[in-house]
Length: 77
Image (cartoon, helix red, strand yellow):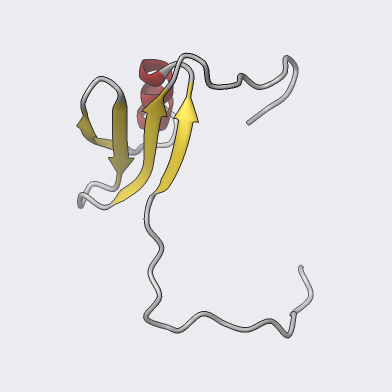
């Protein structure tokens, strides 16, 4: 368990938006978020895919970019 810190807290009415990620293989990553994590594809235009909850709340937006850096072999993430 992490120790409590004396940091400032965000106001209770603060809301976070979707996380935006740059990915090299958009179709592969969309399939991962759908099949493995259970996200629902909310919108896709060929270059970007928005995924989120069944209620339509976007949680992640994937931006396809063939030049996006790939993770090193033998690592996760």
